[in-house]
Image 1 (spheres, each protein chain N blue to C red):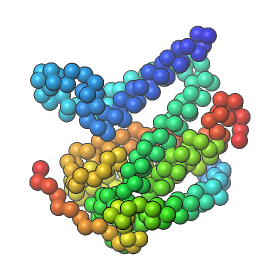
Image 2: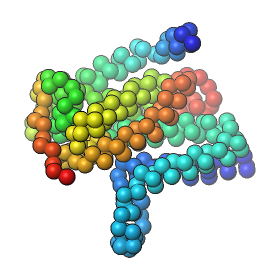
Image 3: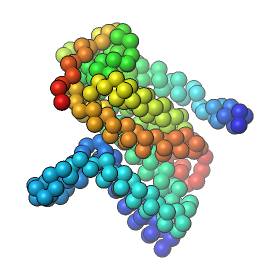
Image 4: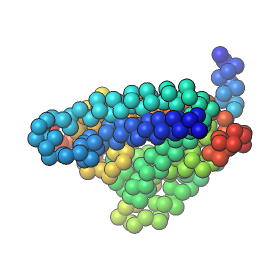
Length: 225
Length: 55
């Protein structure tokens, strides 16, 4: 029993910490919204500026929490981590694609702000890319093709990072626009935070490309597809 | 090293990847027809670049 209780608790806490990391890096002040926001801002007026530090701190804590789980029950931890990463990253991609699929015009406008692709390709890219995000995100969770789906997602992360780096180098002053609709060009600090988030998420995605193809049920049964 | 890389590339189910990409392109076409005309875009082309706000 003890063999499972410690890994379950520590891995759940680690998942929470990773969620905090992603939320805090993507949307500054996420943590503050769960706290006494007014009094915290009154005492520390610049506390919202430390979202990257808070997010990376949560990530380090998550990594530290994985160690006891791994030592206690390696096989269970490996299965649980694969499940959590597949659901987490797949779910994130599905979530990120929804508004882009619902409003191709807004996303096409966002893509155009990057001034990266040739003009004739912007609209078609803006139409196809959210579909890739949605279907590969879904495939990561519900199909056995984990290797292929994570490979596609890995290259999508690479493309996001290239685009964000381009926006920073060219000083385009635009936001990532990964999760929210375009409200026009925004502060470039958000491009930095999105770049950090992608760097954090590309590591587990790459590790998934090295795992054998099998469904989530297959992971727990320990069988190949 | 080279053999490992070749084996790694060979281990992918390329048929699945190609079918998925073609399916996504078809879904994109259907979606652009499905959405409201105010939200759809021309297949080929771009959108105007907005002015950078003064920070």
